[in-house]
Amino acid sequence: MKDEKKVKIVKRIKIDADQCNGCRACEAICAAFHAEPKYSSVNPARARIHVIHDPLRDIYLPVYAGEYTPAECAGRNTYTLNGKEYDECAFCRASCPSRDLFKEPDSGLPLKCDMCETDPPLEEPMCVQVCIDDALTYEEVEVEVEEEEEAKIEDLELGLEALIKKYGLDETMKIMARMAASEQE
Ligand code: SF4
Ligand code: SF4
Image 1 (cartoon, rainbow, N blue to C red):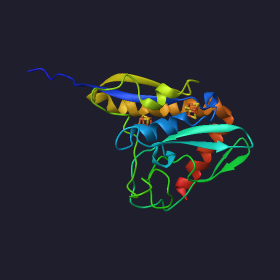
Image 2: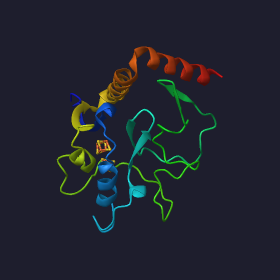
Image 3: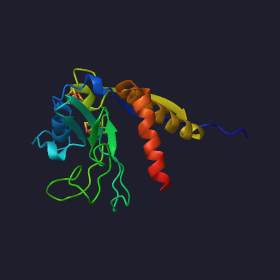
């Protein structure tokens, strides 16, 4: 019998930092949507998205909560973008022991973006719905299971595209070169 390829839906939120105005509505709605009971409180410390702000350059960059890690990194990277040095953990998505970000403030339990999975499902995650400036856009992509690796590469390409658009090819290349050098140390 011929093998049938399985199709999987990959949910993605694309971030266009240039469009972000720093309103933090995404943080508020995420916290409210995940409150128990729903919408009973709005505490951004419980949000699964965090907007990084650089006041001097008027830059806002939304970062989604990713996987929990039980140990902090043994090595750190320092990012210099457009002449400004960023905290080595600034863009990290992990909930980890070295900081309070992406942890439930009362219990300390890790928080992770769940794409607002609910029953019945939403047409779009809540943070995307409230982002009126389209800094966040939602898309679903069908991939065959064997093509999972390809989907990861697509995600990487999207991330690189966003960095190049924001900081230019030269600056992005310099960052990657620095990261590669520190990996080899
Ligand atoms: S809702 Fe959109 S514009 Fe507002 S802070 Fe979040 S990502 Fe930025
Ligand atoms: S997709 Fe849902 S869970 Fe994830 S950050 Fe947005 S509102 Fe929070």
